[in-house]
Length: 402
Image (cartoon, rainbow, N blue to C red; front, side, top):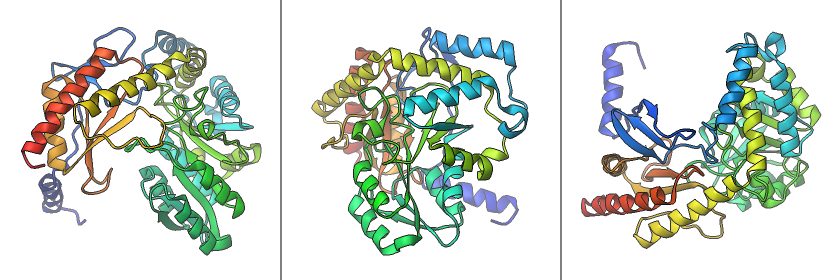
């Protein structure tokens, strides 16, 4: 795009014609104590069904106190990168605790999951090698593959057989297979057991971004890998985020001691950025403790998800089929066109619910949707009311020919 107002205006006009303009909604107040479920935005009270705060820990008083107390001791910012003078005691303790939680030798903190994925793939794949991704992988994995300098290929969504075929054809040139554990827009699980067998056979790295699985899936909340019974040998690289089930901010990579050391030495996304503030690490440590001792949070969000699915199906809401997949708190309602998704979002807003319309390029063209996410902090009555409102909104879109 050349510099000039006309070029920018034309680009924005095309975004508007496609109903793809993104807008921010400012949350002015969290209404209930210790919860972020009920919010005030533009003077309107809304029940938030778009947050990734699956365990309801983002405003837990112990988590908030841990952050506040650490800020008093350590200040608001880290002041430097981890490899200069930004690495503090809270960082070190959190990395040790995350390694223990995930059953890995070491863990390494990052400021965002985006940076963690960039770091891993750019370190493990180089020019002349191949990176294979599930077609619906998160944008951070796609960008990591493109920016790594390696050659890049995607296999059909959830198709482990196609991934195996590509690995066989590429032979020794395949360095990395990367996938979400739980896919953020569909809520389904990658076939990690089959992918683990294929990558071990072909001596490729398997990278699993389990941002939406950790804390929620598995008998003890250790995520998609625990669900499948996979260990560190089967999945050598695990990426997790701290801003979803754990309710804080940041990300980590967990793996062998040598892998983490290699990332520290070579990953530009780690070396050349300011360290996560210590108060964030302190809050995450407390959230991790709570998540492990209060297993009822994980059980509750999954029970509420089951309740929502049952009510929505009964009312004719077009949920994606569950099939053999386990329940996850991500429940999309695919409406097709972007205009239809935006109209349904507006109808829900009028009825007091914040459910964001997800449109291309976040999802493939023709699959615009409402993305409902459940939290342990929601009430049964809120779940039931949302299902009723969705039924009305979806019926209106069908009548309008969407």
